[in-house]
Every structure is written in structure tokens, then in C-alpha cells.
Length: 175
Image (tube, rainbow, N blue to C red; front, side):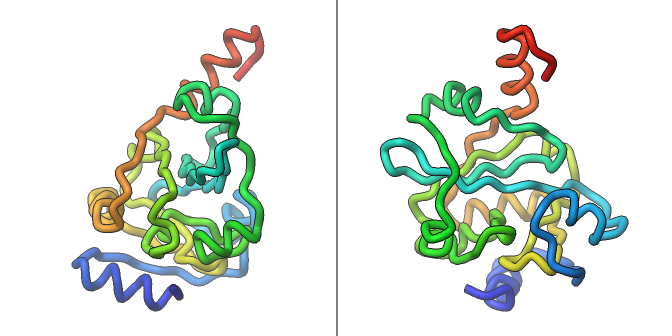
């Protein structure tokens, strides 16, 4: 699936979206510097694999620290680690730096489990890469949730900041 295929899918679903072009961004810091003053929430996306071979996509508010150990315990997931670039390409259809929840429209992503940071849902609109990291696409929060429903992905809503803070507090550390 290309970004144009994605836009056609969003249009077919009746979901409004607006895309802004910028230089390629591979990290949150690069994206913050390149995107300018786009309003709304911005995400970081983690493609993970569990010890039993399952794949996960974690969509977090960009400034939230994600503690994988705390998250796996919260979810009851077998040990989580980062998925390989090869698995990312085969399953999500993108390369590192371009991971986005929009990849869930790919048929190959049907088995990916989605974790959505509840803190991100405080923003409207939401901003994600449209399958490539040299663009940012804004979509209304309600339309994003309709998109997820259309892909068959029901997110596990998790307050990632609270999960990380609770583990840090239990260890006597600052979050």
C-alpha cells in the first residue's frame, strides 16, 4: 500500500485528512523540528515482537516514555522486544522511521495487536506519517478511531505514562 492508496481508503471511508510535506524524519526529535506548528497530537510508534512470535504496534503520544517491561506486565504479554526491519517490511509494509497506525490497513497487518496510548486521545486532531516519513497526515480523533474499526483493529487503551510511572515508583526511581 502506498500513501496514495491510504488516502483513497480514507476518502472511501469518508474520513477527512490533511497532509503536509516535509523532509524525512526518522526520530521524534527530527519530526518535531521539521513539521512546524501542526496542531494536535503527535505520535511515536513502536513495532514490537513478543517471545511467542506475536507482533504489536504501540502508538504513544510522542513525549511519553514507554517502559517495555512495565508494558508487557500490564498487558500480560510474553517478553516484548523490537521487531526486525525485515518483519516490519513484511508485516506493516514500511521501513524503520515510517511506522504508523495507518499501516494497519495492510492485509498483512491483520494479526498485529494494537496498543493505543490513552493520553494521545486527549488531542484532536491526531498526526501520523502516511506510510512514509516525509509527510504528516492530520485526522480527527473520531475519524482515526473509525479508521481503526474499519481495519478490524480494536486497540488496547493504555495510559502509558501511568504504567511507566508506576513501575518507576515501585523501583524507587523518577519516571
